[in-house]
Image 1 (spheres, rainbow, N blue to C red):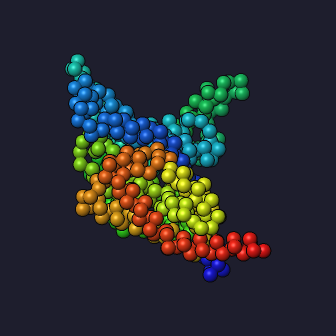
Image 2: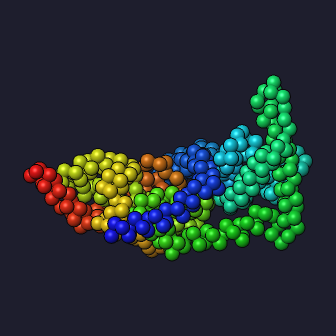
Image 3: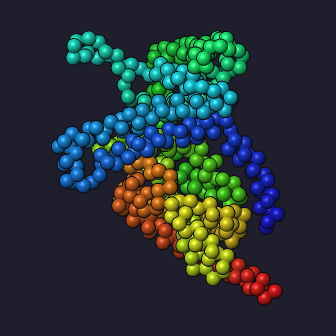
Length: 425
């Protein structure tokens, strides 16, 4: 059995390594994580604005505080595409050893060049040019990804060919960097102006509408489906079972799709509109908390073997905060046939129950609020959905305990026998 497992691992490891080390996927993941503080700020503002406490709501509404709490949402979640295009371009260029903020600034300008403008009359009767926010938030995320990749790669190619203005060494670095970006910026911006003009004369009207209609919307329909949810959950845990960081591999692909869906959730929730999605990054996160290993940590507290009893005591507190690596590698769960069933299918069972419960109205869909990493279970559910989601997490923990228990008893009995043999010797 171990030979077969190792053989399978050797076959899939190179493919997974190639995927997880892909420069563009890493830049996308790194860029989105770099933009996480802004999304958390927007989430916290939404939480403060939407607390379902009648006296509190009456107070912030009567004093106009709700309008100011909406500002962080508008200027974070509703301009998520702008944040991503800057962060991802910077991360991608840096991976090619091209330092500086120049590529990110050019990507921001290029993204805005693709964005159709509007005109309106001001209070003084003059014309004002406006940038509508229609494409700056969740609907523009895929355009932001494409612009970041194209601009980042073009900028690097131009710099590597030496098509830059070189200044004497005596010139301060910030001036040298500004002039170094001038030629790449002019070339890239010109290209995007041409692209914008071409799409403006098509039935789509803009690159944003084209990418959203042809790419983003179909991918969100596919990524938000029940089948995709189950497939992602199984694939992630199967990779983990073979010693490969399945979450990193799978979520690097799903992050732009589910991230955009969460942003749409948060925008709708903040505006008091119906939530458009069920599945998203937060749905996956709150109902697969720590890969269900918290249930195993709880079971270990009643272990008969000293090995597992000690591991349970050491890992229970981190597991409550979603840190389950001590359990995963300390048990171990990877390459361990005893635990393969609960390890692989625990997430799937949890997600299926959560999906069905959401469909029939037992629990509401997650509101898109991104609870910070390390938020303990129950509090995470409370933030991301409400009290019913938090209670549902408690139900899931009980389910996880029941699921892990019979398989743990086998492992615990084996460990106890090994300890007894050692003592007798």
